[in-house]
Image (cartoon, rainbow, N blue to C red; front, side, top):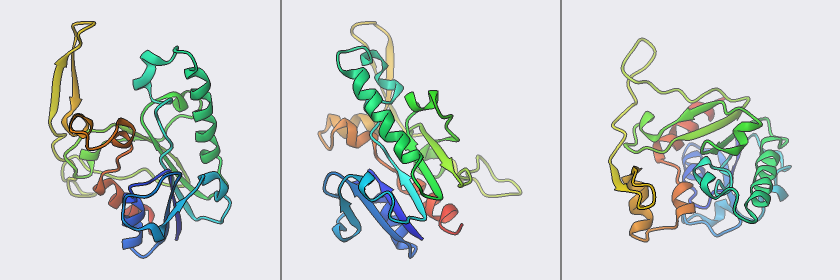
Length: 213
């Protein structure tokens, strides 16, 4: 298939599809970090959205869409940025492509279009937690198993470690997945890049289950 991975600089999903023989390209406004610039289109994805793709998997920026940012929603300028982000999300969702998956945290878009499925990395064998919603068009839900049964073998693993701290303002105990905390505490990456991370076994599940349709 001819596959577009929209808003992806890591090329994790792009490479997974390439490894299975598909003509996949990542597209982002920044340079790729997956070491395959020949498979990367550095441009606004909306400029190439009409180029006869068979499948699009999109990861639109969630900074202004995620419910995690609700404490800041009423700050000056946030509403306008949220509406701009939603407009971009909807342009991807309504793209003239037969099979579409849009990936994002639970957030503002769900008020307008109900997400199809919620997944976690540990559902597919990566021992991490990152709650992710999928909006699917002409694609089945990703299959995973919590235990062996007649249909398949267990794919669930431990959800990984967490770090805990006390919020100084509210005094409430808070927690965060350790992988996410480490990502920006150790300055490995910024928050937006960490939030956009796609785990390898989710990418493999997409290829295995959608690449043969």
